[in-house]
Length: 128
Image 1 (cartoon, rainbow, N blue to C red):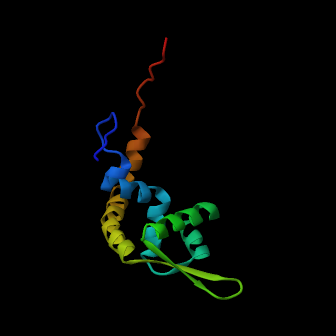
Image 2 (cartoon, helix red, strand yellow):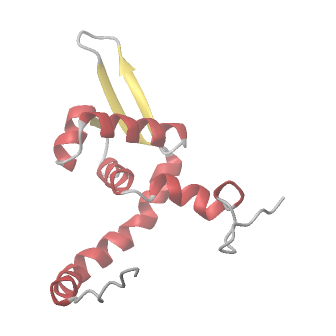
Image 3 (tube, rainbow, N blue to C red):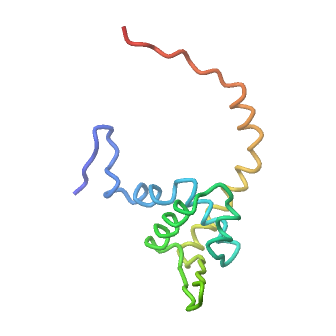
């Protein structure tokens, strides 16, 4: 069944593009994927590499990426437990697609920052 919203866009569950992008399109998922593209990392290494992500948000993001098949989690029987994360083949293929986006962002970062500085918000219309 192809249900549509009032906007004319298909619902998330029926749209393969939205179904995937809704899960990986947030800032944390992309940063985790790009960090893991550099190789296997432990939880604290990921948190240090990303910087401003909380432990809770990193754990939630890793669980989501693992559930969707992008990331694998390996637990070693030690005290304290050692857990490593790495990209699965699906995550590797996604990371390969993200690299051009990262290059574009790096190349155009200054122009975007300048646009933000010079942007003048349109006046808000207030209700009477």
